[in-house]
Amino acid sequence: MPDPDDHHWLTRAIDLSRSCPPSDTAFSVGAIILGTEGEVLSTGYSRETGPKDHAEEIAIAKLAVEDGALAGATIYTSLEPCSKRASRPRTCTELILAAGISRVVLAWREPLIFVDCEGVELLTAAGLDVLELPELAEAARSVNAHVLPH
Image 1 (cartoon, helix red, strand yellow):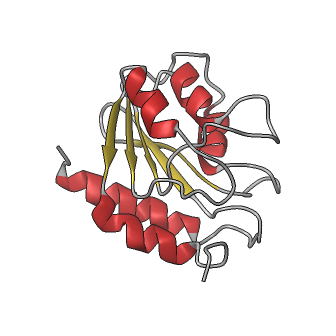
Image 2 (cartoon, one colour):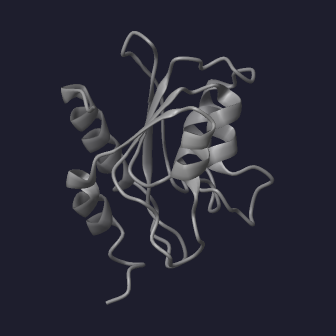
């Protein structure tokens, strides 16, 4: 069940995705990690620090925490966390699981453009609370019009 704050933070993550450097071969994604008291721990957006970087990866890396250290945290991401990746050894789904994040709130499931993503299924199977807010999907899609088929 969404909390009113879920809409607020997911909208902020979508706004953050507008900061992404343009790419014809990748989605523009924003991510925000909140701690157990609702405090912002970290933010990230695609390509923020390098051309192959993903939003969730950046937000987690900024914290430089040990595996499991983010137990109880929530990550808000404008797009489903990746479950397949050629450019890095670990996917965003794996990074979220390793960090111990217990809740994922997303706006839009990754469409079949680059890969067949199973992030939601893998996170749910691992016991995470995964909430999709489809009413915010159009806002996330609009940021990514550059890679969507016309």
